[in-house]
Length: 353
Ligand SMILES: NC(=O)c1ccc[n+]([C@@H]2O[C@H](COP(=O)([O-])OP(=O)(O)OC[C@H]3O[C@@H](n4cnc5c(N)ncnc54)[C@H](O)[C@@H]3O)[C@@H](O)[C@H]2O)c1
Image (cartoon, rainbow, N blue to C red):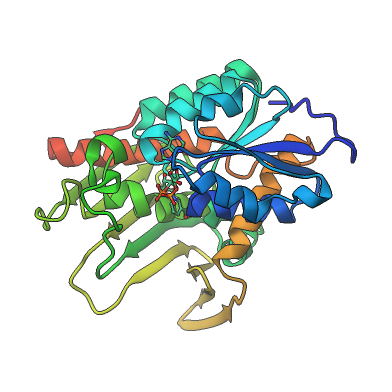
């Protein structure tokens, strides 16, 4: 998709924020730091959040105020806005993103891409139709540790990465507001799998080079029925068309000593383990095993900053999107496959599109 932005210093990308909560603020931190863009409007249905956001991120004295709307359709009617971030609850990702693309805006939409793969495909279809960019906030692709492993994989340092093990398992971490949308399947699309499993599934898949998923065998559990109506754990094996595989373990609540967050890569020349703030490389040569580890001090904030910068640079035609809509649709297809496999009690074949 070719962005048509007038790529000059006098014409910064004019950004509208849809959703002024925590994730919206993280996108905004990135827009403030990125060259070539300006936040010009915010829409939030909450009576005060838009105003608070505008006071925090606007610079009215320097002639850069932020217009505040309650209804995001009013923001989308502003023809001077080039791009929007959609940082709304899951069930609003598809309607807000499709409306924004149809209004001619480029979109950076929060994770999970949508409630299911069919919705995600509607979003990528809308991007194709409009000729505008669609990116998903799978921001861990931008974390310095993931970037370093990605570089090593691309350079062939691990050889053929034939299997990944992707784990995000909390001891207790059901999202706050239990009984609200996060734990309502109709508005969240799922539970732990769609909420946090999506991050490590995407990390592992991305680090393997985004191979075409072929089949999925999965099991999901809801062992805390008084708290949630959705899965609180999910376990799955994804087989790729090229014969490689990925194992996913994710949970909001598991009886174990401590929270685990890591993606392990197993290659013919070496392996890697990557988490938010640490990465380790392992080399297996004959009977000898060596490892080199590195603590990455730049934290998760760095990933959000780089994500917004990548989106703006892509809108300006200066680079490619690192988290394109099509990748989000494929991740949703794998997640759908895990839920379907669990429902049907068998391995399922994935739709290749
Ligand atoms: N990438 C990440 O690491 C990360 C972290 C947290 C949340 N998220 C994702 O961000 C999204 C939002 O999460 P959240 O709801 O917890 O954030 P939040 O509650 O902090 O922010 C959401 C905002 O949307 C507003 N809103 C709700 N309905 C609206 C509507 N119809 N029109 C305009 N504004 C509306 C709310 O008032 C709120 O201010 C979710 O999809 C979640 O999965 C991603």
